[in-house]
Amino acid sequence: MVAQFIIQALLLPLALSIGHGDKQKGFESVMLFFAIVGVVCFIITFLTTRERVKPIVEQKNSISSDLKDLTRNKPWIIMLFLTILVFVTLALKGGMNIYFFKYYLNHDAEAQFLENIGFNNFIAGLNRTLTGIGFGNFEWPQDPPSSANSLFNAGSIIFMIVGIMFSKPLADRFGKRNIFGIFLVLSALCLVMFYFYSPESVGLVVLTHIFHGFLYGITIPILWAMIADVADFSEWKNNRRATAIIFSAMIFGLKVGLSFGGGLGAFLLSKYGYVADATQQTPEAINGIRMSVSIYPGIIFIIGAILLFGYAIDKKMETTIETDLKDRRKLATAVA
Picture 1 (tube, rainbow, N blue to C red):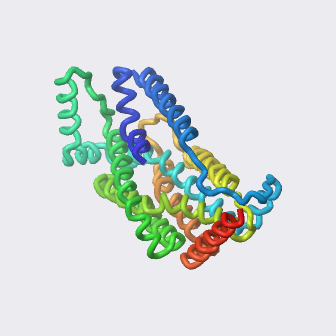
Picture 2 (cartoon, one colour):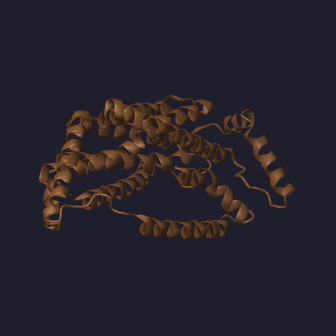
Picture 3 (cartoon, helix red, strand yellow):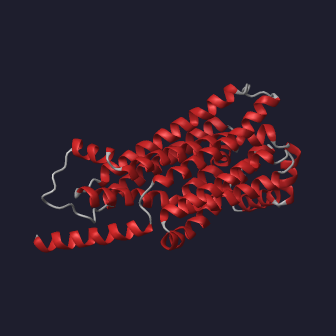
């Protein structure tokens, strides 16, 4: 989440600063740096990962057996579709937000909002500090839509991190499935509210998105914990551990969701008659943009929550699976 905050809030300013106003040159340098950092992180992950749960020695693994277990694992199937839907939504609204700020929200209202909250003074003070110690100016986008959108995303991510802190206590008390479904619906309702705000309601838009970030943040760790529960369910039911293929299949679903969500955004822009780089868009195109950051992602989130009604691993079953697997592993260790 910290990395996502850096990308959402600082990527464009960093590109402008490093490129001395030349975005193309700046992006080349910044993305090269990010790529190097990413490779180093992958290497560290590989070198420091250790397997804690050892499979039973007698267990025989094969791709065909693992795939057969997956197709019989109803909680896994539900989580796969839920993962796809969640990441379709994230890609769709994430890609469409800048159009919402550029073509729907009033630019004068955005500029006034940035001034009222002291954002412009903050950037000016930051630059005075940087130049005072010998650095160049921190170049922030000068147009209100880009600045407001960056602040919009940054605020949401900060409160996502806050929401994550509430995730485990709530899940421990009420169960992962219940908390995930409730907060997915609540975050969806926040998205739907965007459709009803006027172009001058910049403050309400930012505040609602911050609240959405907090609510959605609670679901973030629960998604991956539920996938781990699905892996335990598979071992509990089939007496065979297949964690790797379960998680890798979920990652595949994640990539499908991101790809489809990005493509869906482009499709919707075309469907509603968006004209690239036009100063003004038609009312139909603007309405399509509003729908794409509010109604459509909200509906997809709610469909995901509805899927959880078929997800059988509630808090009681979680406890049963955990206890049974511990007993099995103790017995296997004692026999070995």
